[in-house]
Length: 197
Ligand code: ZN
Image 1 (cartoon, rainbow, N blue to C red):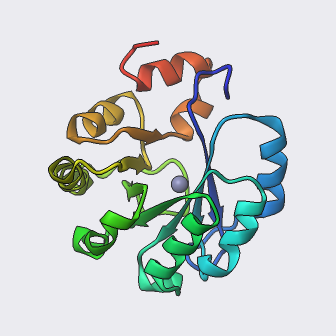
Image 2 (tube, rainbow, N blue to C red; image 1 turned 180 degrees about the horizontal axis):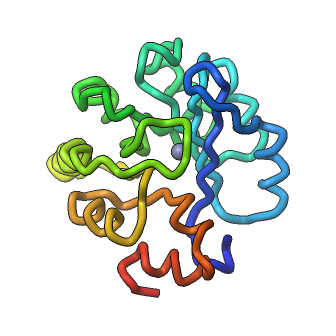
Protein backbone atom coordinates (compact mmCIF):
# COMPACT_ATOMS: atom_id res chain seq x y z
CA UNK A 1 0.00 0.00 0.00
CA UNK A 2 3.01 2.30 0.38
CA UNK A 3 3.53 2.16 -3.37
CA UNK A 4 -0.14 2.99 -3.86
CA UNK A 5 0.27 6.19 -1.84
CA UNK A 6 -1.52 5.30 1.40
CA UNK A 7 -0.35 7.08 4.58
CA UNK A 8 -1.57 4.48 7.07
CA UNK A 9 -3.00 0.98 7.05
CA UNK A 10 -6.32 0.67 8.86
CA UNK A 11 -7.01 -2.82 10.22
CA UNK A 12 -10.56 -3.73 11.24
CA UNK A 13 -10.67 -6.24 14.07
CA UNK A 14 -14.07 -7.89 14.60
CA UNK A 15 -14.92 -10.55 17.16
CA UNK A 16 -18.40 -11.74 16.17
CA UNK A 17 -19.79 -10.27 19.41
CA UNK A 18 -19.53 -6.48 19.32
CA UNK A 19 -20.21 -6.71 15.59
CA UNK A 20 -21.76 -9.59 13.70
CA UNK A 21 -18.67 -10.48 11.72
CA UNK A 22 -15.25 -11.97 12.41
CA UNK A 23 -12.05 -10.73 10.82
CA UNK A 24 -8.64 -11.46 12.34
CA UNK A 25 -6.55 -10.98 15.44
CA UNK A 26 -3.10 -9.90 16.66
CA UNK A 27 -1.23 -12.72 14.88
CA UNK A 28 -2.26 -11.37 11.47
CA UNK A 29 -1.49 -7.80 12.55
CA UNK A 30 2.00 -9.02 13.45
CA UNK A 31 2.42 -10.47 9.95
CA UNK A 32 1.21 -7.24 8.33
CA UNK A 33 3.75 -5.40 10.53
CA UNK A 34 6.58 -7.37 8.90
CA UNK A 35 5.45 -6.35 5.42
CA UNK A 36 4.99 -2.61 5.74
CA UNK A 37 6.56 0.41 7.37
CA UNK A 38 3.27 2.31 7.25
CA UNK A 39 1.68 3.16 10.60
CA UNK A 40 -0.81 0.44 11.56
CA UNK A 41 -4.11 1.95 12.67
CA UNK A 42 -5.94 -0.82 14.52
CA UNK A 43 -9.70 -0.45 14.97
CA UNK A 44 -11.02 -2.78 17.67
CA UNK A 45 -14.68 -3.62 17.09
CA UNK A 46 -14.63 -6.15 19.89
CA UNK A 47 -15.82 -6.76 23.43
CA UNK A 48 -13.29 -6.24 26.23
CA UNK A 49 -10.78 -4.22 24.16
CA UNK A 50 -8.95 -3.45 27.43
CA UNK A 51 -8.06 -7.14 27.69
CA UNK A 52 -6.88 -7.48 24.07
CA UNK A 53 -5.22 -4.10 23.43
CA UNK A 54 -1.80 -5.16 24.85
CA UNK A 55 -1.64 -8.00 22.31
CA UNK A 56 -2.17 -5.54 19.47
CA UNK A 57 0.47 -3.23 20.91
CA UNK A 58 2.80 -6.22 20.96
CA UNK A 59 1.91 -7.01 17.35
CA UNK A 60 3.13 -3.57 16.28
CA UNK A 61 0.06 -1.30 16.23
CA UNK A 62 0.82 2.43 16.11
CA UNK A 63 -2.68 3.50 17.07
CA UNK A 64 -5.48 1.55 18.68
CA UNK A 65 -9.07 2.71 18.50
CA UNK A 66 -11.76 1.36 20.81
CA UNK A 67 -15.51 1.92 20.89
CA UNK A 68 -17.40 4.06 23.37
CA UNK A 69 -20.62 1.99 23.26
CA UNK A 70 -21.43 0.07 26.47
CA UNK A 71 -21.73 -3.11 24.36
CA UNK A 72 -17.94 -3.14 24.02
CA UNK A 73 -17.83 -3.80 27.79
CA UNK A 74 -14.87 -1.86 29.15
CA UNK A 75 -13.97 1.21 31.20
CA UNK A 76 -13.38 3.60 28.30
CA UNK A 77 -11.20 6.14 30.14
CA UNK A 78 -9.08 3.41 31.67
CA UNK A 79 -8.59 1.58 28.35
CA UNK A 80 -7.54 4.80 26.59
CA UNK A 81 -5.05 5.52 29.35
CA UNK A 82 -3.54 2.05 29.21
CA UNK A 83 -3.13 2.23 25.41
CA UNK A 84 -1.23 5.52 25.73
CA UNK A 85 0.85 4.22 28.63
CA UNK A 86 1.87 1.32 26.38
CA UNK A 87 3.28 3.86 23.91
CA UNK A 88 0.47 3.74 21.37
CA UNK A 89 -1.82 6.48 20.10
CA UNK A 90 -5.32 6.06 21.52
CA UNK A 91 -8.45 6.47 19.43
CA UNK A 92 -12.12 6.46 20.32
CA UNK A 93 -14.93 5.57 17.95
CA UNK A 94 -18.68 5.95 17.89
CA UNK A 95 -21.30 4.15 15.82
CA UNK A 96 -23.88 6.02 13.72
CA UNK A 97 -26.56 5.51 16.39
CA UNK A 98 -24.37 6.87 19.19
CA UNK A 99 -24.64 10.61 19.90
CA UNK A 100 -21.59 12.89 19.87
CA UNK A 101 -22.15 13.59 23.58
CA UNK A 102 -20.94 10.05 24.35
CA UNK A 103 -17.38 10.84 23.22
CA UNK A 104 -17.27 14.48 24.32
CA UNK A 105 -15.98 13.82 27.87
CA UNK A 106 -13.04 11.84 26.42
CA UNK A 107 -11.91 14.25 23.68
CA UNK A 108 -9.15 15.84 25.75
CA UNK A 109 -7.65 12.40 26.42
CA UNK A 110 -7.50 10.89 22.94
CA UNK A 111 -5.25 11.26 19.91
CA UNK A 112 -7.87 10.32 17.37
CA UNK A 113 -11.65 10.36 17.04
CA UNK A 114 -13.07 7.82 14.60
CA UNK A 115 -16.54 8.71 13.37
CA UNK A 116 -18.28 5.66 11.88
CA UNK A 117 -20.10 6.70 8.74
CA UNK A 118 -21.74 3.28 8.35
CA UNK A 119 -22.86 0.71 10.91
CA UNK A 120 -19.70 -1.32 11.61
CA UNK A 121 -19.24 -4.93 10.62
CA UNK A 122 -19.47 -5.17 6.86
CA UNK A 123 -17.86 -3.38 3.93
CA UNK A 124 -19.66 -1.88 0.97
CA UNK A 125 -22.38 0.07 2.84
CA UNK A 126 -23.64 3.51 1.84
CA UNK A 127 -22.14 6.55 3.58
CA UNK A 128 -24.36 8.36 6.08
CA UNK A 129 -23.98 12.05 5.38
CA UNK A 130 -25.82 13.01 8.58
CA UNK A 131 -22.68 11.87 10.49
CA UNK A 132 -20.92 14.99 9.20
CA UNK A 133 -22.51 16.87 12.07
CA UNK A 134 -20.32 14.85 14.48
CA UNK A 135 -17.20 15.53 12.39
CA UNK A 136 -18.00 19.24 12.37
CA UNK A 137 -18.53 19.35 16.14
CA UNK A 138 -15.29 17.46 16.75
CA UNK A 139 -13.35 19.86 14.50
CA UNK A 140 -14.91 22.88 16.26
CA UNK A 141 -13.90 21.38 19.61
CA UNK A 142 -10.35 20.74 18.36
CA UNK A 143 -9.98 24.27 16.94
CA UNK A 144 -11.31 25.99 20.03
CA UNK A 145 -8.75 24.18 22.20
CA UNK A 146 -5.89 24.01 19.69
CA UNK A 147 -5.77 20.32 20.58
CA UNK A 148 -3.83 17.69 18.67
CA UNK A 149 -6.69 15.52 17.50
CA UNK A 150 -7.02 13.51 14.31
CA UNK A 151 -10.58 13.21 13.04
CA UNK A 152 -11.09 10.05 11.04
CA UNK A 153 -14.08 8.80 9.05
CA UNK A 154 -14.68 5.13 8.33
CA UNK A 155 -17.33 3.61 6.06
CA UNK A 156 -18.54 4.32 2.54
CA UNK A 157 -15.61 6.59 1.69
CA UNK A 158 -15.15 7.30 -2.01
CA UNK A 159 -14.03 10.38 -3.93
CA UNK A 160 -17.35 12.15 -3.38
CA UNK A 161 -17.82 11.35 0.34
CA UNK A 162 -14.10 11.99 0.99
CA UNK A 163 -14.56 15.55 -0.26
CA UNK A 164 -17.60 16.06 1.95
CA UNK A 165 -15.75 14.61 4.97
CA UNK A 166 -12.73 16.88 4.44
CA UNK A 167 -14.99 19.92 4.04
CA UNK A 168 -16.55 19.11 7.40
CA UNK A 169 -13.19 18.72 9.15
CA UNK A 170 -11.99 15.13 8.76
CA UNK A 171 -8.24 14.72 8.17
CA UNK A 172 -8.00 10.92 8.09
CA UNK A 173 -10.02 8.91 5.59
CA UNK A 174 -10.46 5.15 5.80
CA UNK A 175 -11.34 3.47 2.53
CA UNK A 176 -11.63 -0.21 1.70
CA UNK A 177 -14.10 -1.01 -1.03
CA UNK A 178 -13.49 2.11 -3.12
CA UNK A 179 -9.76 1.34 -3.31
CA UNK A 180 -9.76 -2.45 -3.50
CA UNK A 181 -12.42 -2.52 -6.22
CA UNK A 182 -10.53 0.02 -8.32
CA UNK A 183 -8.32 -1.07 -11.21
CA UNK A 184 -5.55 1.24 -10.06
CA UNK A 185 -5.04 1.64 -6.29
CA UNK A 186 -2.73 4.62 -6.69
CA UNK A 187 -5.25 6.52 -8.82
CA UNK A 188 -8.08 5.66 -6.40
CA UNK A 189 -6.08 6.97 -3.41
CA UNK A 190 -5.06 10.12 -5.29
CA UNK A 191 -8.73 10.71 -6.07
CA UNK A 192 -9.62 10.50 -2.36
CA UNK A 193 -7.10 13.24 -1.70
CA UNK A 194 -8.94 15.40 -4.21
CA UNK A 195 -6.67 14.61 -7.15
CA UNK A 196 -3.53 15.98 -5.45
CA UNK A 197 -0.37 13.80 -5.36
ZN1 ZN B 1 -12.44 0.60 10.77
